[in-house]
Length: 324
Image (tube, rainbow, N blue to C red; front, side):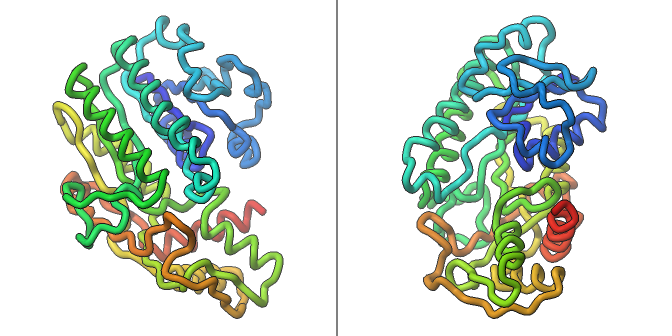
């Protein structure tokens, strides 16, 4: 099977590419930044820093470019057909979009529209899309199922992901695509290079006696291992023979507070700092204090997280610290 992976150089994308290659797929990946894959030693060939399609191995080609420019590379579509597209490319920095209010429109909404147009033009029928639990905003329905009625995103990132889902649904209806939309909770694990765990580790490396925690530490999230995320992303579509678009929450079975996460990070590193809270019920504007997803629909497919929240966090701390 030959697949296209957008956002192939990112945290989740690089894990996905690695697993696809292990399972014998032919992969073409596109990303605006492959620095993470180079830094982590996933790639050895710095020649990818060209606006061209470069062979890294017999089963992997990489394009260093913005997905909005993917139509510059028609040769990857006309020579051999793609079975499906894994679309992960996005701007995912909620805080950055507070000052650059165009970034989510450009990379998320317009980027997704570009991918849908590529599917239409080159007759690619299957799409796996990485959405986000942030689309739910502060819904009153907890745990939150996929068919909740009161979806009101409170971040520009969440709004852009909801817009992406709407465009995907429309294209499925008009052009006969099949799409699987996955609303991820907080994914952690191997190749992670930013996020709360990395942030805590960096702070503790600078000052092991004190740790600043954004908000009040009571924010409740679902942290699940990237390997569990990839397993669902790749395998649920094989079991779900939908005719249009299906939506799945992907998260851990249980949740954890940010304060509990800090405790685990400190325990793994072997420090006992004083916690300093910035105050308020959330870390920043657009942050959702409580993200508790109903994952019964995903569980019915046979998918189940292998690692608990605590195990996923400990694995991530060990990976980040070992790499440093």
